[in-house]
Length: 79
Image (cartoon, rainbow, N blue to C red; front, side, top):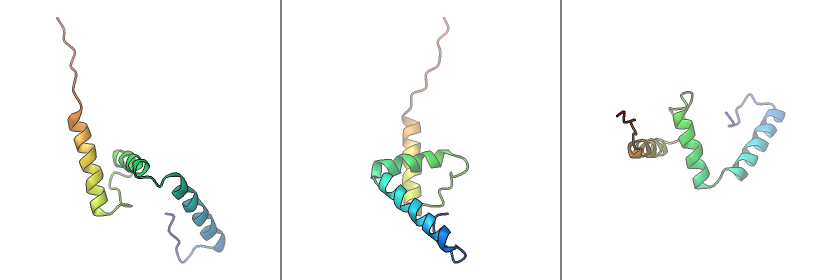
C-alpha cells in the first residue's frame, strides 16, 4: 500500500512518495492504466481489484468479458 499511514517513519513516507511520483510519471495514460488494470483482473491475487472504484471495476470486467467473447475457438478437424 503506497498510501501514507500514521505509523510511517519519515523515511518510509519519503520512499512511498518517491515511488508514487515515479509511477505516476510512467503510467498516467489511460491506455497504460487499462492494460495494467486488465492484467490485474486476470491475476488471481488481485482479481477483486480493491484499488479501483466500483465503476472502474465494472468497466474492466466488462472489457475482459467482451474480449473473451470475441475470441474464436478453433477446434482441429480430423479427417
